[in-house]
Image (spheres, rainbow over the protein chains, first blue to last red):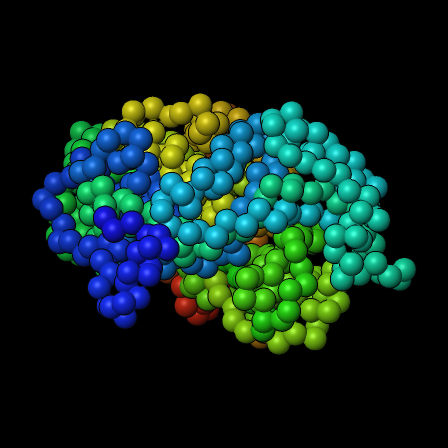
Length: 418
Length: 89
């Protein structure tokens, strides 16, 4: 594989950049693989990469019905954080933070990781108490957390509404300074390029239409490009999980919902951090191009449409204007939607299933992007060793029947009603 | 914008409604021994199909009645709406 560096850039400039190697090939599927990963998004590509790198399993195919990176890894707001209270989520995400910090070097691909810090605003004394508790829990797990008072928040984000007559005055906030953002497409492409170079077949425009299961064991998958045998199969398909589960006669603790995001026209550098509104569901950061990147609530009803509805967008931006009044002056540049695998306790599932050789990775709710490396790493471990790693032991499929929920937000089963 | 034909009030915009989820889920009968599996199915497990989905909506800013709506989850087309106690055809 061609190494990307300033020297290769200069060298290729002499040939008008016409002679770069392709970043990944376009192979026809083999008859059989050791492992098939369904879903060529961030998690699937990362899983294939770590299978090859950490476990030396390279006879692997990624099967993607569209094009790689065309789903949620290309449809998010690029936020990376580990500001969780519960041990399972905190330790898992902080492990991921380490992988994020090394990712550009590790993949030889600039993912533009920008640890600019995330600030969760608090709008009441009770919320300050809750944030103080969460911050302390984070610090016990070795995650950086700083409780900010109103003045400290105002120094960092003076453009927020600090006037006297507001419905939700800012009392302070909880900050994780090491959190940040990354270039989402580069994450998918970086993982794809490395996985491909280690022998993984990336098969695009190939839709899974069924599974071959016999005597409780997976034998392969049926696809639009024919049958492919496999010893092990991993599902990494986010919002499409229920469609595949239905082919396997499985019913999961997941509903598929639509989440929208949008960007404004680009403006000069203004906002240095990721900021979340504490009295509703709205978050905002500024991209390197200057656009304000914003997101918030789900559309609120089961949806596979990958396209948003205006009432929700209007609701979310109303919250945005309550937090940052200047947003009302901006024009919207683009909006988009992705379909989320909303689990019943708001936490993901990375586990084996009752079918031998079939593994499940789903339930990412609002937080799939930041989990990409840790999800891929632990899922690769679970597939390769046929047992869960300590880091994803809590993300079991049966926790809903045993009662060991990881209910980070205390919302109960309807995580989409907040 | 979805427009939902409330069987009590007529055609209204989605802004008047709150979503109530899958309408095919049945609560286990009261005063009956309920297995963990039955309870698990009722509380957590959902088919969440792509395509036709029978769901509950609450006309919260209207007549405040719960209704059932048959809607396509990928196109958002609404085929039929029912009163909560009406038989599904």
